[in-house]
Structure formats: C-alpha cells, structure tokens
Length: 264
Image (cartoon, rainbow, N blue to C red):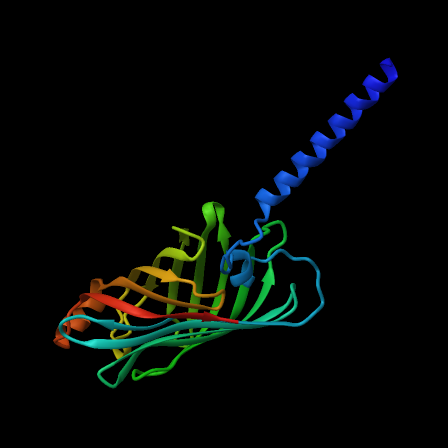
C-alpha cells in the first residue's frame, strides 16, 4: 500500500513538471505571435556575432527614403547602405544625399572593407574611401571608423576622414530603436560633422559644421517594409553657417518628414 501511494506521488510530480514546462513553452512562443519585425541583430549586420561562417551573404537597407517639407520648400533625401561578404570579411557601400530645388547636396558615397574587432563582440572596424559627389566640387577621402551596437542598444558609427587636400574630417552617427509595440517603433537619430579646415569650395567651415537630427515613428508592415513619419531638425554652425548666410540661405530648418524604410 505504501509503495502504491509513493508511486502515485511520483507520477503526480512528473505530470506537474510536464504540465509546467508545456505552459512555459506556450508562453514563450505563442502560436499567434505577430511578425515582430527586424531585430537589431538581424537588420544591422555590423552587429552580428562572428560565427566564423564562410558563406557569402548580401544585405541592403534604405534607412531613410523620405520627403522633407515645411512652409518654404520640399526636399528629398536618402540614406542607405549595403554589404556583401562573410561574417569576417565584408565590402560595405554607403550612400546619402539631399536633392532640393534641383540641386544635390550632402552627397557622399563610401566603399569600405569591414571586419569584426577582436574582443569587441558587437563592433566592426571599417576602412576605405569616401567620395563627395553632388552639385559641389568633388572631394576624395580616406575613411577609418568603427560601427556597432553599444550598451543599451545604441547604434553608433564614428568615422575619421582624411582628404586628398590634407583636410581632416569627422562624423558621428547614432540612433536607437524604441519599441512602443512589436511593430510600432520610435527612432531618435543624430549625425554630426566636423572639419579641421575651411573648404570654401564646398562652403564648409572648421569645427562643428552641421547637425542632422530626427525623430521618426515607423510601422513595420512586415520585416522589410516600414513607412514612417517624423520630425527633422538641421543646423549649421561656425564658418559653415557664415558661408550659408552669405548665400542668403537659412542656417537651420525644421521639417516634417514622411518616407519608407526598406531592407533585404
């Protein structure tokens, strides 16, 4: 009799554990879980872990593909990047620019070799070339930077540039995804540019040249297609602002933006 009771207790305990595990698994992966959209580790390959895969991958993202409008004007801007390669060796292409009143500005395009930094799990080192190709004079730069995911999931990319004319420039880009829901995401973003010398040809002054900051709210219809709206503030400073005033243009602007975020 005692053995039977003991056996019943053991059986009940096993059934309880099995039921608990089944409940926990159901909570972890609900059958009707929505498409949660791209996580930073998937959408930002520079932050992927070096798993020593030798397969060649291809990734492209158009992070900004938008119209910027206020009461004075409407401009079009793009900012995108693509890479191909393995986990350890990649070729990156980056491009950005603004078209306003038939003139293209802030048009720079980069080709970079990318490799994970040892002991810095979420950061890659990048080196290559940048070409300023827009309505202004062409400039060529050597580029050296890092790009990755810092603590608290801030995406940052500081880059140092050295031009063929002996100028030194710097750029710091940063952004963060704040999930309101699994599909509705608020993204603050900022980009700052610095230069060591004046470049009158491109109307750039030494020191802090300009700031481009924004706050975008996007809805991920699926992982690869997300329309958004937002607000952008741009400002110019120092001698760059002086050049702009001499041209009769405003040195700062606040615009409403609407656009698409695409990737594959």
